[in-house]
Amino acid sequence: MWIFVFVCFCAITALACDDCYGPQHDALHDRHVRRMQPDAQCATVEPRAPLEWGQLNFLHTTDTHGWLEGHLKEQNYGADWGDFVSFTKHMKHRAAMLGVDLLLIDTGDLHDGAGLTDVTDPNGLVANPIFENVPYDLLTIGNHELYVTDIAYETFNGFSKVYGERYLTSNVQIINPATGTFEYIGNRYRYFTTNHGLRIMAFGVLYDFTGSSNVSKVIKTTDLVKESWFLEAINYDKPIDLFVVIGHNPVRASSKTSTFGLLYETIRGIRPDIPIQTFGGHTHVRDFTIYDEISTGLESG
Image: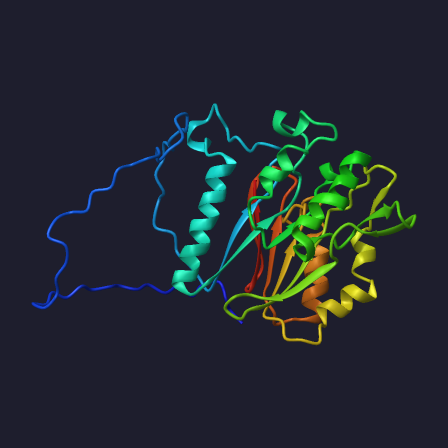
């Protein structure tokens, strides 16, 4: 099923009529608040072309590392997290008007890198509640959520609970202090139906990271693809229109740390006709790759 390229353009024509009438004078409204923050920076480059909408659309973030105030020294990239929150709301509204789906996705590394995260102990106590204003549909964990035990537990006890089943950690576990046993920080997978009826199976897979503190562990992808629950999810007993594989993980299979290649091969070997869309992170570069005629990967920097 090809679901990425269908775009609908609509034109509205207004026809004059003798019976139509309206106010005789323009309505004037006093502006009680400023439309822009006093210190907000305007972009220096306009969009190249109108955005084309498809049947299914995505907004993807990754590796924010606390940079929620924007890039203050780069005017064209000066939008802050509040601007992004507003943007996502407008885009969701626009998608609803067009009768298409829009999914919001993040692929981890919220911590370490800016004062807003690093000012607290554990870091993220100020930044995370700001980040949580975006109603993401799918999220996953990054390696910077696992280096420090306190941050790992804050992610387990706090952040992951905010997003519930939408927070996916298919191969990351932590010791639950209440039981003393390992359990998944988030959900292993999510099967859901979009507002317009697309049935999606999603996984969240961290690359084979080995630097976590001793309270958490990352299951190697070579072991993950053999686990019965993973294979059963691929062969789910309900219809699947699309696999979405997100991960703090380079999307280009040739990258030495990427495990997306093995994940793609495993899913494709079992379900040869279902599109696969991946979203990656970790390398801090923008990248795009094509796995086959119905499967691609995007990394947003």
